[in-house]
Image 1 (cartoon, helix red, strand yellow):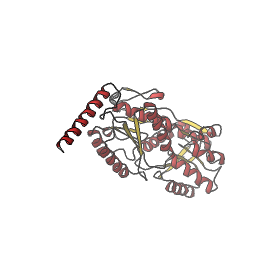
Image 2 (image 1 turned 180 degrees about the vertical axis):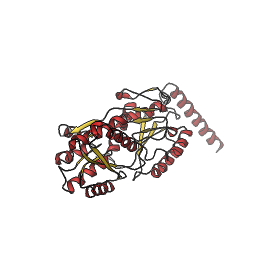
Image 3 (image 1 turned 90 degrees about the horizontal axis):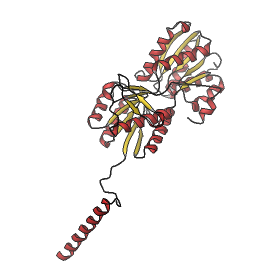
Image 4 (image 1 turned 45 degrees about the vertical axis):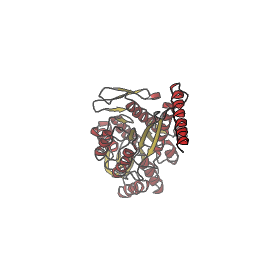
Length: 342
């Protein structure tokens, strides 16, 4: 038995020696070869077409970078509690980076701080986390431009005068609240003085609740001329409500929507125009930026420029935020073309 054990030991030693020798010449991958960079994209909620498109962009960036694995996740309903639970799990999984669209700017700070203390790079995109809870925030566009654009589209639809209402996502959604603030600033301008904002309601980015809120606006406000929904879920639900209430031509819907979801509403006449940036580009750039942080090529300092692949570079302002691109208008002239893309 002793001689047999000795023989086995010599064999193992020989195999190990050969393996190490081959590895030295690059013929065998050593056991300690670096794993892929794991980037988790945490969205507001699953089943949202905007974020599904952002996921496509993330996958494109991962393929281009070559050594990235994207983990796409989010709660079933858009709550901070659901995102906190997911981030806790991602910390346990020791992912390299978290890219998140926040349901609540402040509620997520303690858990994302914990993630960063564990060496995980955290950036927010679309809807931001408060500065202390992330390395950078990637805004899809400039907030003022988004606010003015939505008021301008509503004004164009209703002839520059009349009552309008806003159907938002959640009351805590960072980006929604910023855009609503900019819309209110725009309404104070002389060119929009004949437009009156009569209500702001929240559909929590859920189709059924958004639809009910839109129905409530239509039935409670007989002089309503337009519903502005700065959310892809809300604008779709509001347009359906206008059709169902047989108010096409009397009430118009505008805001931020996906061409693939809004083409039918443009054809029905419920929507004259709407706007959005390209969510594929947004997901791509956010993932690319996260990779730069993981690799130490980005630090998150004010004034820093960060390369984001085919999107060029983004520059961080004093609040370590960057804007990607201005919103683009879609109407009957172009919606079918873009509906085939996202």
